[in-house]
Image 1 (spheres, helix red, strand yellow):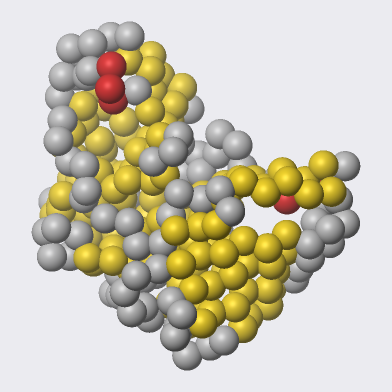
Image 2 (tube, chains in turn yellow, green):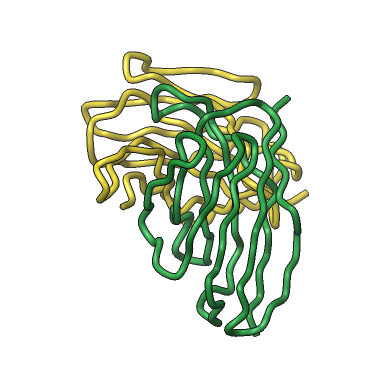
Length: 114
Length: 114
């Protein structure tokens, strides 16, 4: 079961530019989370935004949430080559078993060129 | 800092073999998860466990089983490995309570079944 879907699938920018990626989801949420995955590694939690928040900042990251449109965006300002990674949004969705757990989108691959 | 350790980064096995993937976390988390990640399909949940000896099926449990005899350790078992189980396997853990807690991931095991 997939709840979130990121857009675009891939994004290529130059160092110093801003990168924006979007996430749309289907059902109501308590929070939405963003993760980063460097090539060949595990996912790392970046930021969590609660359903009653509209915007949240962490360093060069800015996340917005629009619950009426069921969408979120992740903005990375002044991108660096080290930001090259895949970025995933995650929200809670029900499994067939009746339990609920975090589900992840397919991710946006960000390439930042020097 | 939470550490989730997967026993192998790379593993090569033959079809029909019984394969064990081990995961250990050091933060006393109640929840542990096994995912597989394939290009174009994102992360798919195989099984998760919310307590010792407790397990729940995820989206794709067929061909897999799990074992959680101790709180810190969660094992994924491929009963009879097949080539379509070649994939990247990721283990994660999270605190108990709400299902929307951030998850902490290991670095993954890239498994090849020949």
